[in-house]
Amino acid sequence: MRVPCRSHLCSWCLGQYRRRAGHFLPDQTKTSMETALLFFLGQALFWGVPSWASEEAEVLCAGTACYTIHWGKHNWADAQVKCHDNGGNLVTMKSQEEALLIQDLLAKLPRREAEPEGQARFWIGLHREKGKCYQQHQLLRGFSWASGGEGGDYSAWLREPRETCTARRCVTLQWNLTAGWAEGPCSASAARAHGYLCKFSFRGMCPPLALAGPGRLTYTAPFGVKSASLAAVPFGSVAAVRCGPQGEAGGPFLVCKAQAGGVFGWSSPGPLCASASHGCNYSNGGCQHECRELPGGSFRCACRPGYRLGADLLSCSPLDSCSARPCQGECLARPGGFECRCPQGYALAGDGVSCADVDECSGPRAPCQGGCVNTAGGFACTCPPGYEPAGPGGRQCRDVDECARGAPCAQLCTNTPGSFLCACRPGYQQGSDGASCLDVDECLREPCQERCVNQPGSYQCLCRQGWVLAPDGVSCLPGPSPSAPRSSDSAAPSLRPPGEAGGGHSPGTLPASQSPAPRSDPTVRAELGGAELSTRQPAGLSSPIGAGEHMKLDWDSATDGPRLLLYYILGSVVVILLLMAFALGLLIYRKRKARKEKKKARSATDSYSWVPDQAGNKAVGNDYSSKTLQER
Image (cartoon, rainbow, N blue to C red; front, side, top):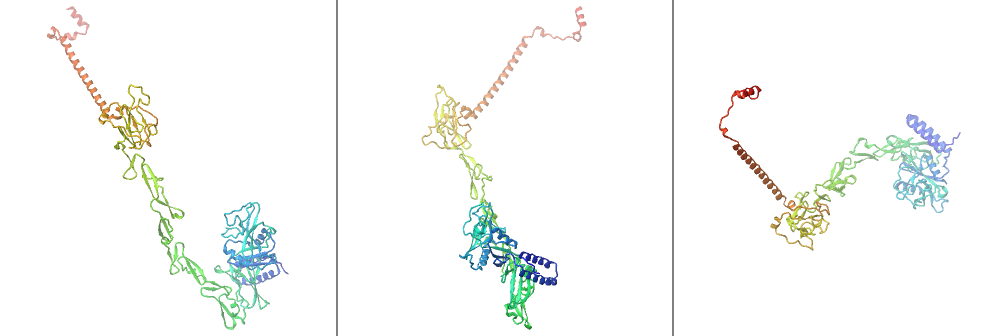
């Protein structure tokens, strides 16, 4: 009884066989069951026709993937379902290498009658869902691959996609000796797609089989496509061998499976279709490396140094030369030996196995903007004083704003590249340390006509009584007559801040249009008492009295304070002495007056001595004694 077998059913059966036979059965049982099952699968593949076997298909396998071409009028969604049902997806082109592989596959296509101009269109896995819009800054312009993952670094747009978000858009690969992408509707009729391209990924690949004698070989991949020649055979594929010039003798069925050491090989040993009449002369006996003749017309396969013979007795795999850990760094097995690699910051030494530190600081391209210090396996960047590390990895240097971080300047601070400068406001000068500010005594330059009083950062000009400060702030002008009525402004001298009439000036300078009035005799100014005082503060500096405010100043209290204090002290001493003299005189007067009164009170009887007796004294003060004296 013939049992129809579809491609997905055969793949499922083959997968069940691999899982069960690879994990639960001993080697001899595996071999017998493999032969019987593979024979059954081969017959089933011949009897049953896959659902898409009627469609023409080409296949190309390389690396760990296979790419197939399928003809037929399908929309994009149906094409993706067909690829997915057989274990793949519509093809991706995420790199230049992958694009070249697909071009090699398309180069196998013959010119078809359906494409009189020689141009064919195939669905690929690039699409954009409804609601997603055109993205000009992206390589894929807002499209994504049906298999998911990153977009890659490759694009081949023949023209810019439409900037629409209201409909789903799909991409076809247009082929006419060169390949390019074109987006459009996802229906087959609108896009005029002639077929689709699929991609199938695998864990690994087996090398192609070589027959030791005449015969035929057919590979059936897990995704249902048959081919007589593959550059690499995907894991899980079945190889059907028929020996003889016409393929008249049945041969074994072989399966590509995983083997020890992470390699992939065929399930049955070779050689295949070998005969004593041909020996090693036919296709090198099917051996991958060397074929060695043996007595009696037989032969065997051998491998070159650094390789070992596989379980199929045909293929050769590299020895695991890294098991002895010959490298100081990383060891990579290579055909016939191994290769050593060193971690970043180290380079392979002359012996090929040791790693030496690389001095990154001595290279032609300095990695640091400032200083560079080499370390084991790397380097460290340093910055000069006044700078700090910045940028990726601290390789650049950025100026430090010392003024914003509390530079030791007393007044003003200016940031400079790598440093800073201190400055002082007008009226001050820098100290010897360059940071402090000292007050300048402007009065040493005698900027005023009359009197100058130094202040922190400025000075004041004063005028004697009867004179007022001129608008230039340094000269003195005659004031109003004492007999004339005085206004509130002229009745008292004023301390005018900068900005009022008369204008301000820098310390020690005068207006160009005026010159100071003749200075009066200093001896006369020294003898002045109760004179009027006028002050002026240079422009640009703060004044102790607000702008526009006037005040009355006493000449003695403002200019002769120490002398006035001395007068107060001397006056107080004189008053105290006068009071003491008055008190002393009063005391003397009273004493003399008392003496005079005492001399006037004495009489003639004062010459007698009057001494009462004791009894008389005792009787005084009682009634009895008084009566007795009266009776006597």
